[in-house]
Image 1 (cartoon, helix red, strand yellow):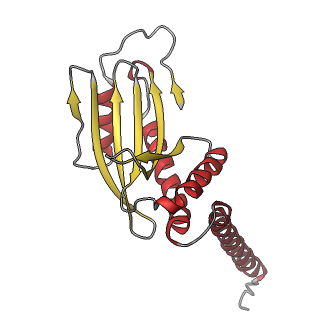
Image 2: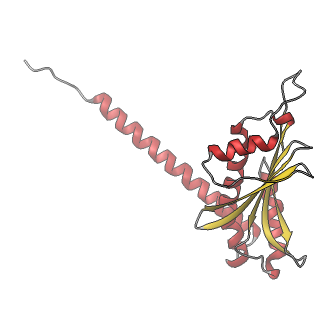
Image 3: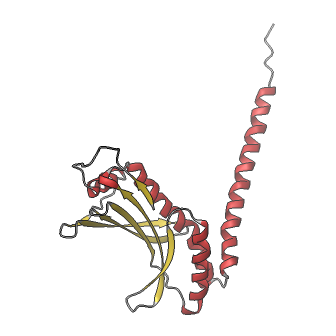
Length: 205
């Protein structure tokens, strides 16, 4: 959880945390707006994203005015965890949570109480609504990145017969390919630049 504190001496602000979230949603040019619960001084917003290989993730954004919290809950509801794979998925979640710096994954129950779905959670603390819109964007992007990179691994465990350790190698291979592709691009750029530097222009007589 990231903490963003107001400047010293600023004890009150007219803008509520929910107002900041509305500004951020407008900046994204999204139609969704928070459903406000005045009694509990909170609000909730639901948006859907298509990521990766067509995966749909449900993002619920909850604002709590009393605590100054903006919470992001990311759910992958398209596929339930097979009972036979639950232990391996929990092992995978624990291994992944050791690696990531912001937020954490969890296995959550369905309406019957059975552990069924994968969820990612991250949050930011906005004291007196003193928070930049970019901070919310960073938090949102962290959730997108986490789900995008981990869902293929999750699916490989649930339906591809992979162990937690084998699934983690999928992400490692993907990162290596990105690094190699970037290295090839830099090499090509360097060669092209060298050729340009070696080009001689001979003035006409």
